[in-house]
Length: 538
Ligand code: PEP
Ligand code: MG
Figure 1 (cartoon, rainbow, N blue to C red):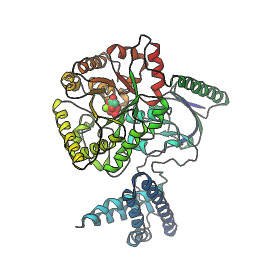
Figure 2 (cartoon, helix red, strand yellow):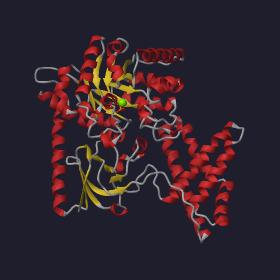
Figure 3 (cartoon, helix red, strand yellow):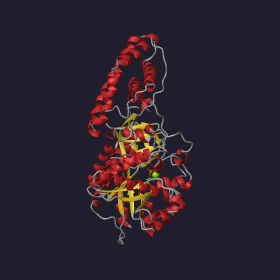
Figure 4 (cartoon, rainbow, N blue to C red):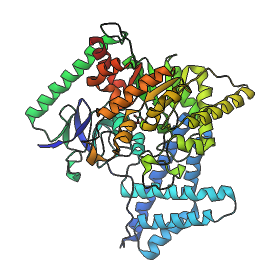
């Protein structure tokens, strides 16, 4: 039995087998092979597997995004069967006696360069596709399972670290718990784990041994422990702990339909945070009053091209109609910092958390912003939508945003597209926004305080820096005073004020938040009923 300690991101107990998650990047090595025909057979098998994967992706995309989007996978399939491409690879294996991974990568790169030099725009665009199909074949050769988990039963996922886009791509139905060796409790990966409602540990002192793959293990989210190969007594104790935890959860269900009201009659809205359409079901089950933060950027992660207006419209429509009239606050694209998306081609930065991100990108790449706004406005006809803008630092940004919003509304009106009134608000997550919150409040209808970033920028501590986790303190008096100031100024300027950062779920502060006069707390669906219980006991 091996006991490892980590930082718990979500309470709960998971019992199952470990799955060692391999990073998707393959480090290319060139090796000499003796049996070239055997190497060609390896390549052919990997290529056939890629064709099957592309078939499955075509079907998935057809259902989720429509034929136009799905076509790309058909194109990839055709390219994988291209005679010149196949000959290039097989000849290289035969002539140079090299491994298939090397031959595929080299052939892919040279085909890609040829496409890139063509004049025809369509052919030029294929240069990325040929790299993509080559990467797929190489991953198959190297046994890397793309965004997937090669297991039929749900597993405890053990990884070095996970980026938000890797997390988004994972098949959630196959995960009992996450355990990462690195990572910060304030990162978006941790936030995703919370929203998926599964126990998770980060910064765990575990060795990533191949031997652990398939071993029985327990994740104890209360104690922050990963127990590998537990003995019988420990297993029995953990089964009981899991049952007790689930019983407590079930007892909370008696609070469904009850008000979020203190004993002396003070009411507060408790909303939920989501990252995708699947989360809506959890929000409904949790009986949250609405969605206080839909992190729309997750729609942009884990894919290779921009989501179209139509794709986004379908997603927002599904969320809005699923919420049956309850408010849904969609936060516009907050890409940048730890949420990197290759096709945005963001410049490398010394300090990305303080760099080109969120509203800064949207106000610079207005077409990307407008596409999202059009999709949200179109979807607004199907429920009660609100929009909020991240990383605001000045009144002029809001003035510009409102101009763009008006342009979008005018375009839709001219096209005869109907939409509902949409409440507009901003996130307060920079000290600058706090200091000018009275002026900002006159421009918008609501504030939502992003305590994750507000803590980062107030304390000058990178929320991603795991070695500073111990001093990243959202309870710091400076952060709490910032929140108080925002509420007071927001109310003075006529805006309602909520918190959608992780601090909203911190029950040791619920009374403080009520005293400060907050109007809303938006938390991961898993925390809604627990928070309601706390409020009702105050
Ligand atoms: C925040 O900063 O508190 C917030 C809610 O936004 P995110 O965590 O997505 O940056
Ligand atoms: Mg933020």
